[in-house]
Image 1: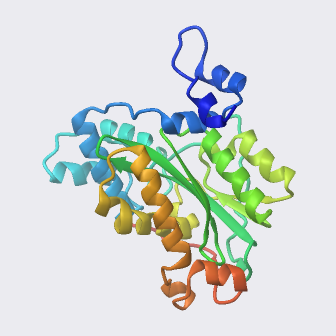
Image 2 (image 1 turned 180 degrees about the vertical axis):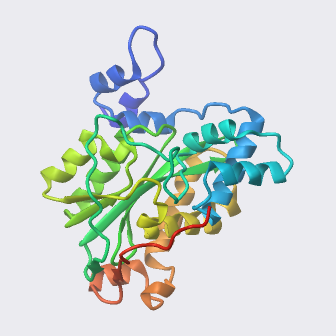
Length: 294
């Protein structure tokens, strides 16, 4: 029996949870969520979320205060509490640390940031990951991607309509199977990445775990640049309506990004060329970033 067939068995049922159905059917829960129709949104919330996403892509240091002012200047009657709620839904937090930035699960271990001052001089030395919001005409989903920092190559990606850890773990498992284990894996402190299922998988492969400081979006700067590229070069231009067409579009875009898009920071080579040859890439992570004005 194929996975696709077994996935069709999964449906909301008051007597048995989706999680239990997936376990019994031997189906990854994240793949089921990715196939389910997007939940309808309040029309104005959807507009506000799209605006917040676009502005954050341009100014990741904007916290909820600045975002509230930004939306008010556009004519929306919103307060900071509503903006904070929408930013939590989007998984966004301003770069500058503060009392309302994203917090890890209180029972999850937090690991130190290992990259400050590090010279990255070979493929497979450092991988990182992050999640971003992807707007659709009829809803939204989340995208997770794993990147090799030396080459900027996108090693794997997945989408889901929840921010639960399962689809991140599945993405990591596939990347490890295809490319082996990196020396260091860097993430933010989101609960998806501090979960035992995620960190335990890394530890089982002998990977050192590094985590950004809370609210420091630019500690993961290369993935932030990837999100800007994906959104401005594909998502915002194409205006995908539903998950199936998004899947097709992202498959084509990441193939283009890795194999045919020259990168200025790589001397106009492609990530695939740099990853395969071990030449032309790299980075030196600065000791600290300048303070951002309030």
